[in-house]
Length: 621
Image 1: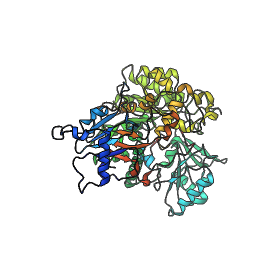
Image 2 (image 1 turned 90 degrees about the horizontal axis):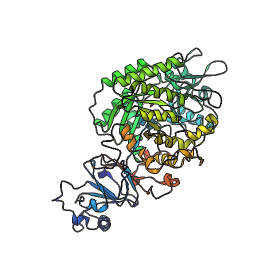
Image 3 (image 1 turned 120 degrees about the horizontal axis):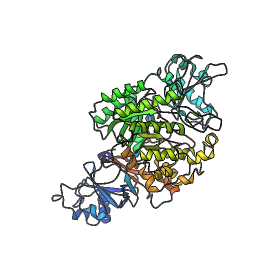
Image 4 (image 1 turned 135 degrees about the vertical axis):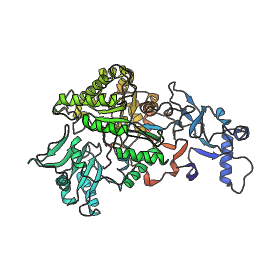
């Protein structure tokens, strides 16, 4: 929250005060005087040494001192303190360096020897979709049993008028014995059309009322890569996977504008509480783009957003998306919202759905498939190349979802063909890249193609994919070390709401390759703390074409800062998960303080076993 709205909570390891000179006045309480004296004792003679009249042009708005400051610049430099002025970092150095910048109205934060670092840039997160998971915007379906799931749907139905929609999110086939079907839902929902989206966003289930409204029959043919699951008699079961979900979503009434704004604000508050100040959101629609633009223009944002428009599954839909981009005129600060390009979804996910396209089959013999339009694989690959070629010629950035190694190879080949050995100035990149091979990583490095991995999902999944893809691929899954050694720049993202955004879990995963199940998955893929932190800061800034103004702690860059209650450099990697943000600053403004955080928007606790890879479509419905 803004500094002028801060409330005093239980004393913590972070001490702050506005340093004032002179005797205690009626306006200054005894507590304030003691806090000012304590600050003066920690920074000897800072107030006396500062000459506000002589240094008025350089007096900082805020100084953070006594910290373990990770600048995360290319040299990995460390510091003790930094100063903020007019929303930017004014100086970085030791405590003595900052004394001259402290004036009468400078706020001072004692970091207590703990980590001070750039604000986290979650490089793959669906902001509005994450906000829509908070009740009352949808029913939370993260349950361990079908009975509990049905009970929650029944409770929602009891409060929903006849004929109106019920919407829920978060169920997981990794926890449930099977996907819920219309046979489970019909007895408790009646004539209320119901859509329940799983936590990956790649599968939905619906009741009979919704299936009828969507016109889905035994004769309905799903789009390429989509799946309509059927009962033994050929009737739709209610379970729709990948592109088949669009058959249902097109009849679901959209959320109101007020609901979307509420979702953005709920999500932003939860992200700020985790130390997140920027997100890259792939796959939005024009309606969401307009909403973000409006909020940015109004100064109503605490999380920066760089977004890609969802380009559909064919050259025709790509052309329509590029037309929107050509007509886009931004009237807001591009540092708070920027529409960067397009997102393509090439395949599915390597979960029980088995829709990620693999060279080597899953343990049950399935290979998955592309989700691009086309009557066969050759036509799908040709259309993928056309889509990437058209977007490249339009000079926009492309991020392409590809999880299986076969899909990844097809995408990288299409990128290389579009680039024709020219530098990748648009910074096209691979989204997810679960099973990217060493040879493909080498090819990506030669052509400047970056990748976006999901360490937080790897932490939550542990070894859960082994029954589906085998032990060898489970160990290699998201090969951080191999990628960095090949020279590929890697960013990390939570893919929320696929999982709750917990970047400290991601650090544990990268440094230890240990998951929520305490099992190790591929120790050969471990990387160091500094490299891991860069995947959440400087690397995403570069992915966003923003490394000149955010992502590291250096003078002149945006004052997006995360203070923790621990020094990551001095604790064991297994203790990272016990750390948390205490103060978070975005654009020089305090947007989160732990003691002042409202329980109304407190992030939900992460449930062990929630997965997994590749929630790719931010639903605005």
